[in-house]
Image (cartoon, rainbow, N blue to C red; front, top):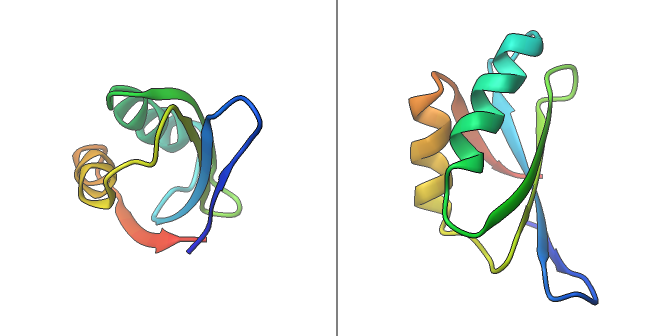
Length: 79
Protein backbone atom coordinates (compact mmCIF):
# COMPACT_ATOMS: atom_id res chain seq x y z
CA UNK A 1 0.00 0.00 0.00
CA UNK A 2 1.46 3.30 -1.10
CA UNK A 3 1.07 6.87 0.05
CA UNK A 4 3.59 9.56 -0.79
CA UNK A 5 4.05 12.96 0.86
CA UNK A 6 5.38 15.67 -1.43
CA UNK A 7 7.32 18.80 -0.55
CA UNK A 8 4.20 20.93 -0.06
CA UNK A 9 2.95 18.55 2.63
CA UNK A 10 0.15 16.99 0.60
CA UNK A 11 -0.30 13.24 0.39
CA UNK A 12 -0.83 11.35 -2.87
CA UNK A 13 -2.44 7.91 -2.59
CA UNK A 14 -3.37 5.55 -5.43
CA UNK A 15 -6.33 3.24 -4.85
CA UNK A 16 -7.59 0.31 -6.91
CA UNK A 17 -11.33 0.39 -7.58
CA UNK A 18 -13.13 -2.47 -9.28
CA UNK A 19 -16.14 -2.08 -11.54
CA UNK A 20 -15.37 1.23 -13.28
CA UNK A 21 -15.88 0.97 -17.05
CA UNK A 22 -16.52 4.48 -18.41
CA UNK A 23 -16.22 8.22 -17.90
CA UNK A 24 -19.47 8.29 -15.93
CA UNK A 25 -18.00 5.74 -13.51
CA UNK A 26 -14.87 7.88 -13.16
CA UNK A 27 -17.01 10.94 -12.41
CA UNK A 28 -19.10 9.13 -9.81
CA UNK A 29 -16.06 7.85 -7.92
CA UNK A 30 -14.23 11.18 -8.21
CA UNK A 31 -17.26 13.10 -6.96
CA UNK A 32 -17.74 10.95 -3.87
CA UNK A 33 -14.05 10.94 -2.90
CA UNK A 34 -13.74 14.69 -3.59
CA UNK A 35 -16.35 15.29 -0.89
CA UNK A 36 -14.10 13.81 1.81
CA UNK A 37 -12.49 16.39 4.12
CA UNK A 38 -8.96 17.34 3.11
CA UNK A 39 -9.15 16.01 -0.46
CA UNK A 40 -7.71 18.49 -2.97
CA UNK A 41 -7.61 16.40 -6.17
CA UNK A 42 -9.00 13.13 -7.52
CA UNK A 43 -8.24 11.44 -10.84
CA UNK A 44 -10.04 8.21 -11.66
CA UNK A 45 -9.03 6.10 -14.68
CA UNK A 46 -11.55 3.40 -15.60
CA UNK A 47 -9.18 1.53 -17.94
CA UNK A 48 -6.69 0.83 -15.14
CA UNK A 49 -9.09 0.89 -12.19
CA UNK A 50 -6.79 3.36 -10.45
CA UNK A 51 -7.91 6.42 -8.52
CA UNK A 52 -5.19 8.90 -7.57
CA UNK A 53 -6.12 11.07 -4.60
CA UNK A 54 -4.21 14.11 -3.34
CA UNK A 55 -5.11 15.20 0.17
CA UNK A 56 -3.81 17.46 2.92
CA UNK A 57 -3.22 14.45 5.19
CA UNK A 58 -3.50 10.66 4.88
CA UNK A 59 -7.14 9.61 4.48
CA UNK A 60 -8.94 7.06 6.58
CA UNK A 61 -9.26 3.92 4.44
CA UNK A 62 -12.77 3.26 5.75
CA UNK A 63 -13.90 6.76 4.72
CA UNK A 64 -12.52 6.17 1.21
CA UNK A 65 -14.17 2.73 1.11
CA UNK A 66 -17.53 4.26 2.13
CA UNK A 67 -17.23 6.95 -0.57
CA UNK A 68 -16.44 4.37 -3.25
CA UNK A 69 -19.33 2.18 -2.03
CA UNK A 70 -21.65 5.21 -2.22
CA UNK A 71 -20.62 5.66 -5.86
CA UNK A 72 -21.59 2.01 -6.49
CA UNK A 73 -18.13 0.48 -6.79
CA UNK A 74 -15.75 -1.59 -4.69
CA UNK A 75 -12.47 -0.40 -3.20
CA UNK A 76 -9.94 -3.18 -3.82
CA UNK A 77 -7.24 -1.48 -1.75
CA UNK A 78 -4.28 0.75 -2.43
CA UNK A 79 -2.22 0.26 -5.57
